[in-house]
Length: 240
Image 1 (spheres, rainbow, N blue to C red):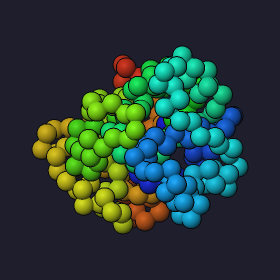
Image 2: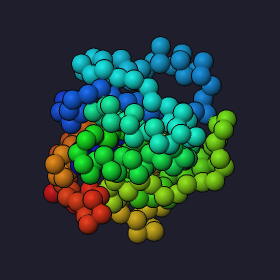
Image 3: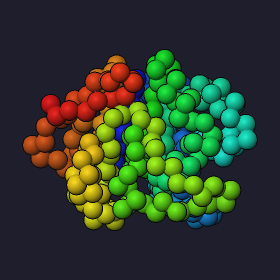
């Protein structure tokens, strides 16, 4: 299994992402942003941040993969994803993203391809959150009722279970969601949920079934963390 889970964008270890991506291009999934009008998204990518440009700067070709195209034709998804070396899932609303993932059949496909080591999974913020067993506590950061055209209203609380701990992004970071991240951490502590809070810049990677939490450039004296896999093929986290 190969994973690259970041708090904010690619994080501070792009060389590790290139290493994990292997051969093939990058499929960028941006459905967590489907509640934002298309013209506003295009303007943001042109003026502020473009994931395709970021991957291009790393020497990786990328293409957009819209999961809405697979809602009525789920059988095509496996064949299309296998053309890539890395699936990269952008941040946004984690609950909206989970709706798109579930309806397209993505969780079953990515678990199968990861188990066969045919592809790597990466994502940041919401894209990292949905890799966990549950979205409980993330409602303090993202609105579970956020919808977009064509989306079903049912809230999907179950994540994909690629790791066996919850993730809180933007923890104690210079980010608008830093305060709500504190609330999410408090919720998980009170309810006994295993979790890891990531600061922006930090990245959790898994390669050859061995994982580590890599500190951000702003971190000071933070020890890395390690993980293995449990009986279900999920990455386990423990402090190194």
